[in-house]
Image 1 (spheres, rainbow, N blue to C red):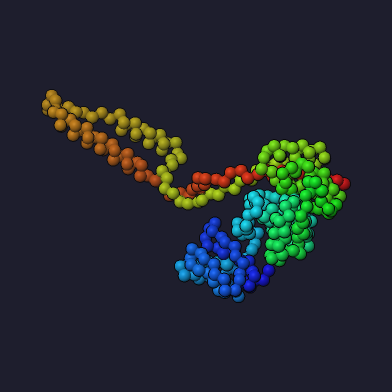
Image 2 (cartoon, rainbow, N blue to C red):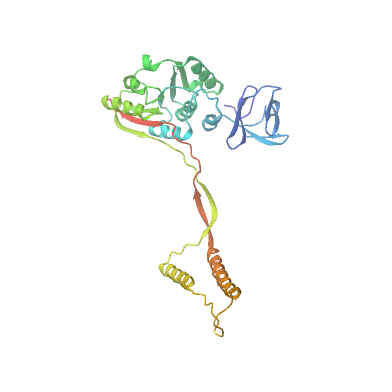
Length: 327
């Protein structure tokens, strides 16, 4: 990929957090944003990452990298996000030079991350049973300059298997019935063995897959659900904490004494007081106690706190990992 934007380049426009748009640069075209009209001619010749000034603000023109592509790609299917993708790359031990098989290309979210990890000497063979989706993915790989590292094919691997044998270091399956592809996986993995990962949204799929894996000699079978929980750190005013037992005891005794104080409503010179005088004495005492409580409540300290999200994205799917040692 070149460092400058040219006609025909795909650019991700960054307008703000979770506000990304994908465009293809064409001469004399105009794209409307919340910051005003963006002329494509203003992008041509600029470096990726440049700040582009519009009538009501500015945007950034960013290149296509796996993280941004996952957020901005056109959804043809449900996709995997970076929380799952990073775990898949780690557990499958995908690295430069790896040969990887992917069944279920979908929208190509995982494919782009795999390609970046296996470059410059590795290769990805990705299969999709839906012909149109396979064609669109192949075109995107070519536009992004990745066709050298990936082969995208239209094929039903559940029925026909993979066309290769003993070439793969790792296999990823995103299929409705991954257990039916286990025997095909055994044929395509290298003779020295390899790693497998399946993605399934339902636990019943996971159970059937694990049973088939165990029956065919796979080891280290484990299933993971990966959820991303973002915490925000900020300073907040909190009540001062007393860590010493003696201080806590003294505060408690002081509070008990205040609660046990009795208001003497009788005057030493008079047998009784009228109702108005009695009410004034009681109000004065209550006001004193109230002021004391307020002074005690104002003893606060500023501390750094971690605040979890009020709403958290739920379940996406289960990742099942296994290892096969054939020789």
